[in-house]
Image 1 (cartoon, one colour):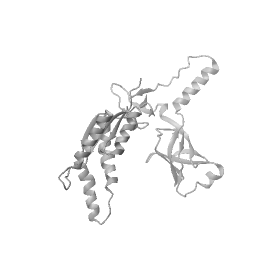
Image 2: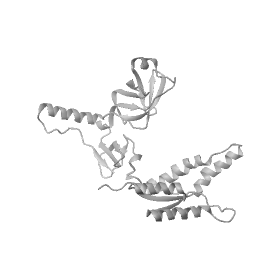
Image 3: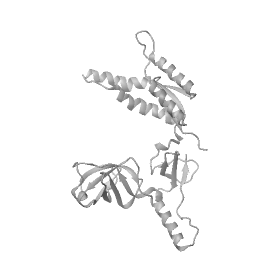
Image 4: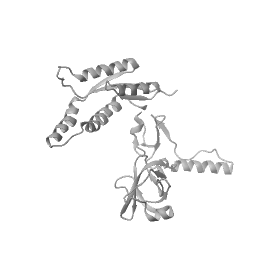
Length: 287
């Protein structure tokens, strides 16, 4: 039986975060509640409201029977959020400290605490990028991330930086943002067009063929398989020196390794001989 996925829920002492923790608990997640103390000044009556909020968050954890943790980012909040708030007022502007707090406190300090200290969501699979070197101790040669399974928290790795599982020649984007607001005339007319693309800054341009879909998305077929295509990155399209537009990568075609295995199985089935095993090095899951 697979262990329940571990989720860290930030508890403010209010209703919204308490309900979020409750719903996660009901859905079978292993939940840890964490209260962030970002302010420690007393109000007009001499009471620190953060302490009262912390007590409420603690009671929520007791009722839900989940672990409770407390972290303090008073110093970080003062330096990165409140000081900026005062500086903006001095300049005659109307600041929004919540947005700055999200950037510096919630999605930086708190996120790093959750990942590094509480082992959230099975090996932190979401932190891995396809093509990056996997940190696996005890191995003589480097292994690289070739696939991720968010439902299980699995990260698939393969040996060698040039393993065929790292290479793909097909992807589909979301709706493309065209700089000229409309797709190129040739693409509209023929539904296909030759051009170039890249998905990493300063990488060499890759020759490809675009196929336009009715919903404004495109299929991108690279002339040669490309290493490390990754969901969520943006494919940027060029025609000569002109940048045409870009679209977020939402779907990937099969890897060269998968295609090799498919051809191998087809050959075995046709010939009626052999043991059906591929000669390519295998993949291995890690957590």
